[in-house]
Image 1 (cartoon, one colour):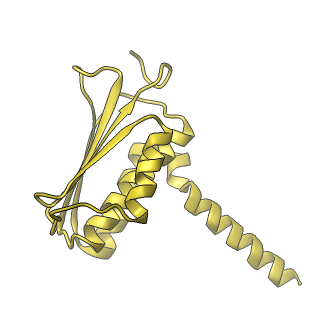
Image 2 (cartoon, one colour):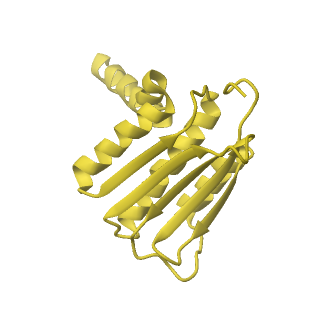
Length: 158
């Protein structure tokens, strides 16, 4: 009985870890992205770069989770479906658009003439909409996913 309970607790902990990675709790979004990217690189041998151009920022957990999962899904899709060997992740705040941040994930994979969203892209879209952001996809030259996310008062010094 004890072994079954112990195993059940382990399963719950693993599930919770998948819902909110420990790296987000410990290192914030930038640190969690760096860790995730290094893990992808170690198992896939794909060249992945992160260009983080954000001021110090304190995201609420829901937003941080949505952004992390969006980027994770983009990288997974680039490798699995696009067979990309180079992926670039850029996260920035534009001076000309002070109330928003942008995220672009671009790969050199196969791309596609028309985009028919499957489960992964629909989940990504829903997550970004829950934080009032917008998302667009372009498969004409590799695959590009671009998000525009509103910043809230208190997240950063504006």
